[in-house]
Image (cartoon, rainbow, N blue to C red; front, side):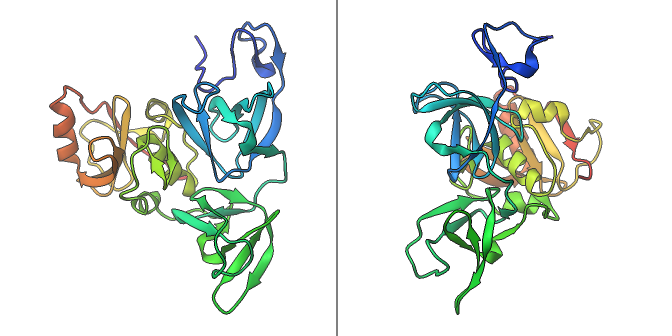
Length: 286
């Protein structure tokens, strides 16, 4: 069986040392551990800024660097979901202790110091993680200090071990976010990115693309089984989340955003193009 090259670092000239018995390559290397230091890092199909976006890595995510040719790009694998692609080298920092705080809101501002009246120096999206350097408080807010610098308001973060009670509620917080192929944040997100991000915040570790999720997420439902909140509905190349037994939330190119609509409407619209629901799945308790 051939390897899925989205999830395995293998090329004719270079491959992951762990694949040495499974693929042929001119050279095998062990990945060098590193971490994403940008708020959001694009993982692209080729080492070019105009190359298609495959997915995005979030601040604090661990990566393995398999090639760093010194031309501004590195060939990497995201440790969390295994996705392989090219990432701008400036967005990757050295390996560091694992983060201990995670952003739980769609997006939070990063201030240069614990003071909400200072101009922000950036942002962190939902799911981004960092190592706390301490806490602070002024008359306006309580803060978590970011190592090596910056501060975010305390109520926008939680321990990395915390899990949202309901991943559908997480997805609903991203309503109206623009649709972006390969996106995984409040700046832009696609169907499977929404599912992966929301489910991950509730402790469900899912693979990235819709076909991967359809093959591995939770358990399959019988065709006539009633749907409930949190069930996943799949079409070829597309996935949505049931909000109840009749309503669906999904990032889609029809609305060009994360939208909530009756499942029947989505089924009818896809059916008019000859596209049918292929399966329905239910996530198991994390």
